[in-house]
Image 1: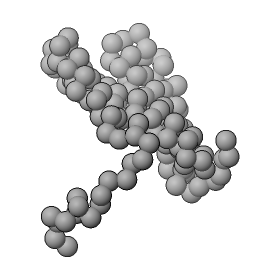
Image 2: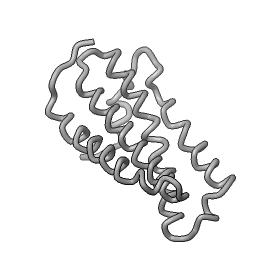
Image 3: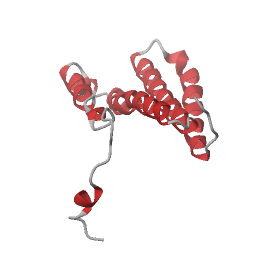
Length: 134
């Protein structure tokens, strides 16, 4: 694993540090239902940011693909955690109880299957862009 500094990793690194800081600050509310959701939200954000930092930090293709796949956990869980958090904050917890929340997670979890497992990801770009006018 060859690690190289990349200036594009600074913003995700800052986001990760802020998410960890806010997670630590929010720990005092971990006994409440909304506090638990907040901790999950900040934890998922920190994980996603860490995966993006590691993706930019690594130079080889295999580690980059590994960290891209690890970032899908955050990509999938963050909107669902945000939806649950906002529903709890606004007093609409019944909107996300049971089947509705499961349905949102299930629908968003099939996103990563769009080509990262293929050995060669090289679509015919000209064929796809032929219908667009510049």
